[in-house]
Length: 168
Length: 165
Image 1 (tube, rainbow over the protein chains, first blue to last red):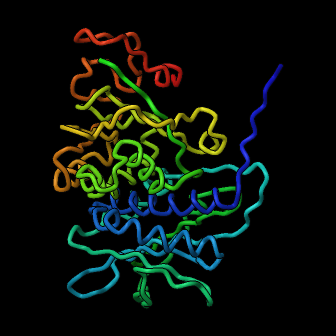
Image 2 (cartoon, one colour):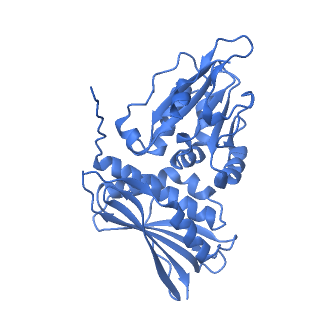
Image 3 (tube, rainbow over the protein chains, first blue to last red):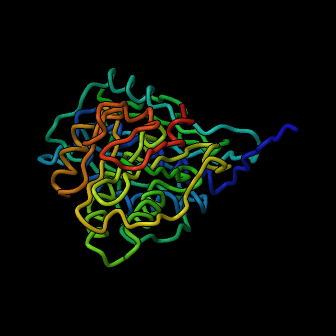
């Protein structure tokens, strides 16, 4: 007798996968860019709680990693993960493309080691407040151009499309 | 040496944080134990290694008290169907005494992970995936240990690691 096992994926699986792999991708961006991911790791619980909550509710539009000069407060680099809500309960796959990030950083170059960073979430109106998160504004990207990498996190249609900014 | 293996479901059935919480609950069931505080201090780094899917390749090893414990994780569809999971509770408390933990880590992350753990814990360290843990006598960690007998202990077969390959 042949036994067939079918894994039933739910939307919760997809949101868990995407939330976890956004943080994994941000860690890799910092690491490959020559920055210490320690602060990101220390803040992991708060970051994950916010990202997961707002993906679950459909309010999360993008997660932004801002890298800035602590002396001037100017942006020196920025990475965006744009969330796309096209989830279906079919046979989609779960995957994360870490090589695309590595390749893009090779083109973008490493960031100054003295640079600081923070994670900002852009959300739709009506999102719930999450402990540890506060309202802020993004730094200006004037003089920078956005480079799209494409989908780098995929979970049955719920996905994260990656892009980065570089100086023109 | 007696070796016991457990395999937990991880991302996406559980988040990396919830996976780590399951590891902690398994090896330090007393919420007020000193081990809980030690493990809480390394949670972020451990979650990062779990999220990197390092536990699909190699095990967290807990040793020093009772049998050596190897903890693997299932990811992706394997975690969702959970057929290969073994999360049964342990017959001993591996952190009740002079315990140590070794977390597997990809080479790219090893430097910062080891530095961070060194600042946070005297008991928890990281090793490259596939490297031996202290006292494992040179057999590649990811290949498990089949029929190993040391110090007169009972023969131990890490079947989970054996069938994984």
